[in-house]
Image (cartoon, rainbow, N blue to C red; front, side, top):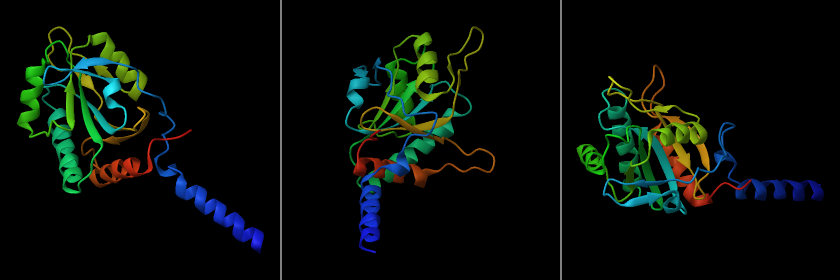
Length: 203
């Protein structure tokens, strides 16, 4: 009986110290490819600047006529809730899928249109189109295809992605209502808070 009690105690301690609820999904667990970009203020922003914070990432472009508006609105709702709860040490990063046309000034105007709090939110551009295609596929298992000749609309995924303090991609969420699936704002907020509290994923 004493041995059983000790065993159960050890299991409880290990489970309490683990980050099992936020272990990477099977498709993820990789660290972000290093990158260097320009943010909406015209300043250099790189993967090194992400270290030490929990991040939510998505793919957008300012001329988007379909999925980006509801995605960006939903992200503002997440930020508002995190701010309301006094959460620190998090960041939002939106990668432009149309770097050829999305200048820092356009990204800043886009963020202001949605009332994005840019002290936490970075919108980045100034990389080539080949990079963003490969970056989306390798890191997030998603498409990120810039506009083609005669078409001003890019093609990209609509998910949000959770990234830990070491740059490890943990999981994804739907970025907008899809069919009978509703945007999981509460789940995202709780996951960000949990990852901040428990620290980065450890293999």
